[in-house]
Image 1 (cartoon, helix red, strand yellow):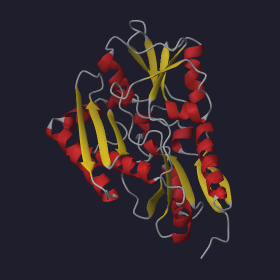
Image 2 (tube, one colour; image 1 turned 135 degrees about the horizontal axis):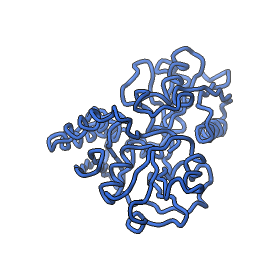
Image 3 (cartoon, one colour; image 1 turned 60 degrees about the vertical axis):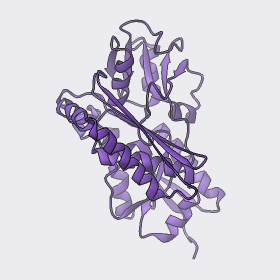
Image 4 (cartoon, helix red, strand yellow; image 1 turned 135 degrees about the vertical axis):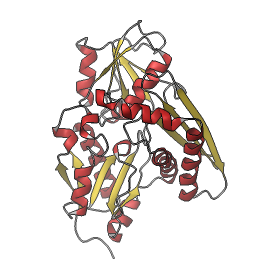
Length: 324
C-alpha cells in the first residue's frame, strides 16, 4: 500500500522550527511523498514566563502531540532535546535524521573563549545545564536567564545587555548565522543536552503507512546515540529542568555515552562514561547503556543533586529551552 494523500506535518511557527519542518518536508518529497506544513502554537510560544513556572517539560511539544492524537496532523517534528522522555503510548518516534553539530557556542563580540572572557562577565543562557557547567569552570561569572529565539538572544550581546550568550551550534548553523563571533565550547567542558542537534519525527504508532514513509529519513547511528541519551535522562528521573548533560557516539562497533550531573551553581559535578561494544548492537542495547550510566551516577549521589535543583526551582532558574 502507498499513501494517496499528502503527509500533514505539524510544527511550531518559530524560525528554527520552520527550518526543521521544511528540511523534513523536502527530504520526504525527495522520497516521493507529498507534504503540507501546518503551523501550531504551543504554550512555550505564548507564555513568556520562566519555563520553570510553566512546568518546563512539554511546553514546546505537548500541543503538537495533541494534534497527532486528534488526527489534525500525521507527523510532528521536534527538536529532540525538547521532547520529554515520558512516553505517550499511542505515539512513536519513527525516525531520527542525521544529527547536526552538538556543541554549545559561546557567542560574544570578539569570540573570546570561556577561559579568557573578562572577570565577572555577564553571560546569558536559557539553560540550567549550561549555567551549571559555566559556573563550574568560571564561578565568577554573572549568569543571566534569557529566553527568546536565536536572533533575540544574539541581540543581548549586540546591545551590551550581556557580554556573551551560550547557544546551540546546531541552531546557528541551520539558520546560517555562522558569521557570529563564537567559541565552540569543548565537549569535556560542556556536555550537551540530551538529544541536542537532533530532530525527532513522531507519528501515531498505529499508522503503519506514515511510519514507513517517515522511517526513510532515519539515521541508525544518530538513533542509537539519542536513544542511549534519552534512556539516561529517563532513568535519572531528571526531565529538562535539571542540570544534566548526555552525549553518545557510535563508532567502530562501540557505543559510548558520556553523562554529567551538577548542582545549579556548578560547585558539585559528577561525570561518568559508559561503553558497549559488539557487531550487532541494537536499540535495546542503547537503552540498556543509558540505564547503566544513570545507575552509576545515582550510586555516586546524582539523585541528591537533581533533588537539590528541583527544590530551588521556586526561584525560577533558567531551564533547557527551545531555540537555544
